[in-house]
Image (cartoon, rainbow, N blue to C red; front, side):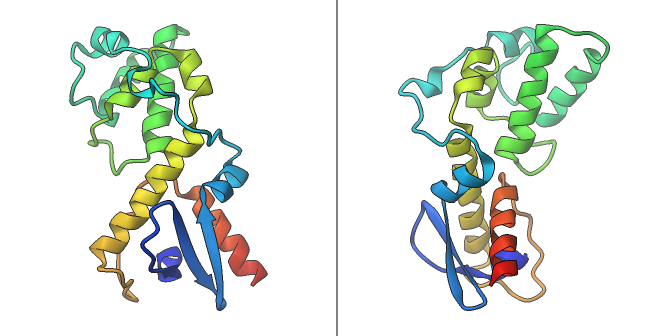
Length: 177
């Protein structure tokens, strides 16, 4: 909420502006890359088809409507063993809860994440910085749209997306301003 109070309204989709102590501060993919250290390069041309749904199909007996809570439950079954399946489930849970950072455990996991975990190498080289930045910007736009561009003093809102770097950036700028 404190972050949103300082948001300056713009039509820019690829960056946010905050006004802290009268100083405008930009948060773009460049700042996101610096704060996270994540790969923010362009997506590979074939990124939507990376991996496959074979792993998900084998474990869940379906490829649609896989939710975070489903992954958590399945991971419990693999709790005591070291296996490739456990590794892939752990990666999937991390991607869904941290990189995508959707609302709750009942959120459906998007197909890109379900596909890419079948290829651990693709997971290692994928530009997760770009992905998490886009999720963050989408979250900012959604909140501002729901609040009609004005954050009210006692507004309660849920903010989804990987926002930790954004919070760090605003806090650092607030402290230095």
